[in-house]
Length: 273
Image (tube, rainbow, N blue to C red; front, top):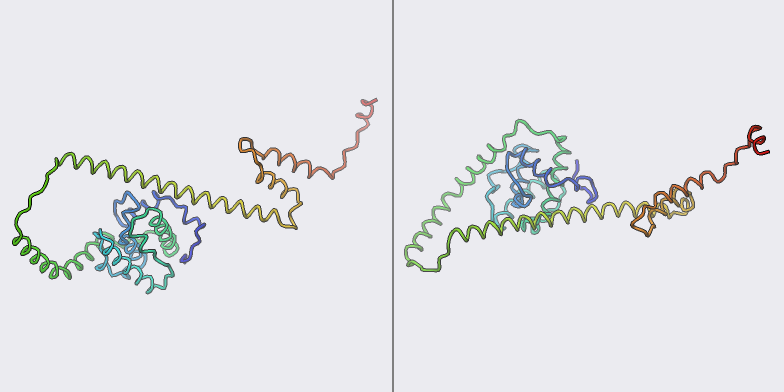
């Protein structure tokens, strides 16, 4: 099973749209952005679907908004990882910040791991909505007594304090500004994610080219025509023109350099005369 996956593994080149589709189809959710999974609840239920019943879903908070509540979800996930002997370090402090790339990489790893366990086949006997509802009811019932006491305290405090006056603003203007800010923030997030993915692809292909360069520089291959032709492409300085034709021409000449010229036929000799 895939627990330790290198950063250049194909798993980390799965796009965010594919990851979101995977989550939404499996768990019957409607996520539109990777950051919406930053609370850790989705990851907990993905493991629960892969290993039915192993996750105490009553401890998983799908409504987690604060970093404290999110951290509690990741604690549940880490405990399950330990129980299943899954060796995966969770960068909790980075994940709860909602950073797109950090969360995307973790979800890419999670998808590869789950697919390695179940072969990428959905568990038809698992009802994700029912598991969430049941877990939520159990969590709410355990916290109801504590919440009621908290509400009573707040009500007593509010009744003792007098009404406060403050400035008022048009509701429509505030709503428009909020929508604009949210739209711009979403656009910025998408752009940052695109840049991160492009940088990762750049590093991936650069590493491949570097490996080819080292191979061609080896003493046993350095003077082989194919290696020389490859280095002509690697070291070409003119970015506007392709060095492929030059490399092909060199390779053709090198491969045919040792072949004797064909003898002239009697007809060709007579023509020469």
